[in-house]
Image (tube, rainbow, N blue to C red):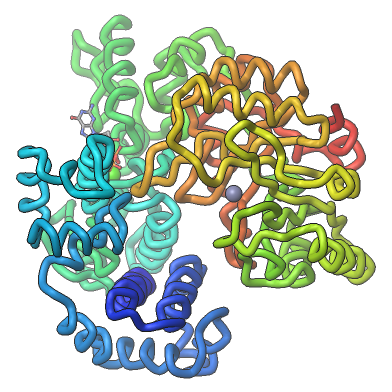
Length: 569
Ligand code: DGT
Ligand code: CA
Ligand code: ZN
């Protein structure tokens, strides 16, 4: 429900922009952003407390709340349909291409009469687009990239969207009569950053669990249904499979369906070397066909002569060899985390106050860094020296009212050369300073590497935020020489961030591992823009686990006094 409504508001904002209507688009985008970040289902909130609950969402006033109500009640939104009618057919589709944007889409629409994605592909093939003023060879390449991303987007969703759906389904299935065990498998269990479909396994004494699954409220369509397996497509726009497994082979089935496929294949090879045959039904003797193991995963790994391997590590990237040598790292857990080191408030582009963020974070953390934007980033309402004074005071006063320790931080911009866009007099007042790239993304690998390295050389900079700048489904990261970045990070004692914001997940798991091997200190930050985003910490930890990260590699596992000592140059 949230996903559809937020997509509708985004689309309405684009149309209103096209119609040259002022202010309204900003309001719709703000509402859309906050709805997509909500931890709860709008329908549920409305059922409990009506319109009032909706109006409590930041950015949702009475008018927008009414539209949400209309959609919840009727499955339609009149204004949305009316706006769509005001829009030339095809243009909307063009406007949604990542990297093209509403303005440029309109230029192509008017000048080249491009009315669909296939029109656009043809025009690029014939090099018509680069002839339009304001476009070039490079724009053609970028549009093609955008089209590829769009195609991928239809197929996968973010982990953070899949996990709540998977958990909701699994919990509901646990209450069905005859059900003994329910577990989430597949890429969701491995905590991969994007997910194609949700895989659920169950042990059950009766097949009523299949009926219950197929008649869940959010099932849009039953794709397949048999006595031990069903596939459905959910209202949320993702497919889900349920398999009922006999108790005896549950561990083997879990192992198979958690994957990854590559991990499974490597494991089967080991089984063969040892005279076994491994399948989703169990581990069998190749000679006699006798069942050897398969009730639990632990038993399976042990019989194959290796340590148990956590699902997040199962990507066939050396985890099997390492487990055979009994050398797997003891990977980080949520309990190890003492702080969240990146979040924004109403002082820049966040939706909650310093106090609200501190109060929510105080429920599970020992300290936080408030890190509003500072610099020239106008769209993020970045602070300047004058407004910093008020910001600083607000943090001081929140410190008095909250038991959680609040570090005074900033996320500062760096210019094209890597100069920090913040006065030394301000930097001096900070406990924690993150430097990030937020604009001028297109430069050569060498230039970008130099830029970030120069920022790290600034003695006031403690950390580089979202180091590659990628936004999943929207843009790839900028090119960097990551070995050089790691080297400089070690040399200058600058931490690299594992940004937990689901669209970012930046560093990714491969880079985390490389950073650790290079001796780089890491920090995990949620980059929260409202109190509900603070829950993203678990995805940052999951990604760190995928990167073989231990507690000792992450500075915000330290108590605050040690943290402050470690981050100083
Ligand atoms: P995705 O694409 O996000 O759904 O990723 P997975 O890993 O959940 O992939 P999925 O749903 O196609 O399959 C679930 C698991 O089943 C997968 O992780 C490993 C196992 N599996 C699927 N196909 C094969 C296969 O052809 N061979 C082997 N050995 N395992 C497979
Ligand atoms: Ca899957
Ligand atoms: Zn940022």
